[in-house]
Length: 103
Image (tube, rainbow, N blue to C red; front, side):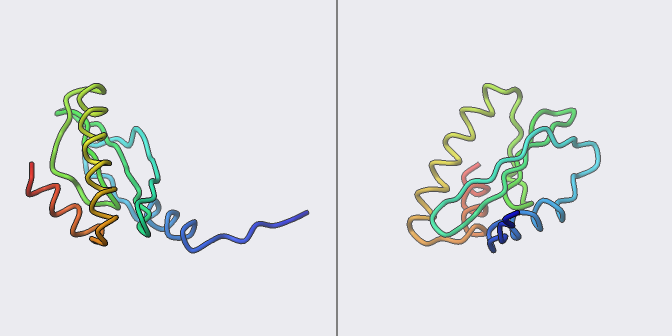
């Protein structure tokens, strides 16, 4: 039987998932992992009474989406911004700060 050695990215993803503390009243509804440049970003979607919230590597992007359709549209623009900023060498923290300033 062949064992696959975990990459740093695999271990990093597992750690991010393990250490994410879902805020009180939120329920995790979906998780994604996206790679932008050298950055691997864990995207966690939670649902709560006010709508759907998105966390990037555990950081809230401070926007609540009303429904799946607004989430889909909003996340497409967030992912485009993530790609552009990662191409420019901006860190995930810088990206989240930029998203939150723009909201």
